[in-house]
Image (cartoon, rainbow, N blue to C red):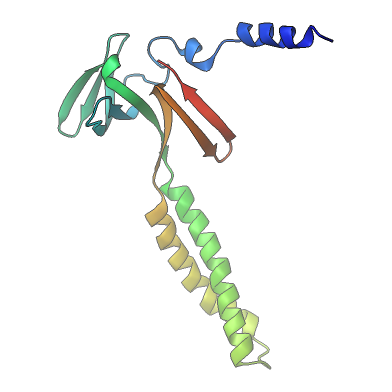
Length: 172
């Protein structure tokens, strides 16, 4: 039983680290990918654009104001877009708003008309659509682009729906 810690250490050392397996250029930083780049240094400017070229020496990104070319040692963090989630957020807001609108109007109607036989129907007809429209508006407003870090030196926890909870350690 005394050999188990040694065995665990050997197995851990033999397993490839995520940063080691990606090589000098992170595999998700490919031409055409939408990226958000944080420059290293005191100013640490952040910009968003599309990768034009990425090799072991530098990263070329096309932004709205033209192109930017950075050596990898000037890059603190690169994040690749996981896509826009506004439709999913809108549908979630729509469903939550409809349920909440129904519940609020039903509660109001039950309190105002305690003997009302059609309070549930009135809540469906009046409360649910108003709540759904409000939820849709909130869902669209809150829906935004999601980002995944792929480069730089970083230690950050993350919670990703559908992927779980963990800690990302990114080494260059």
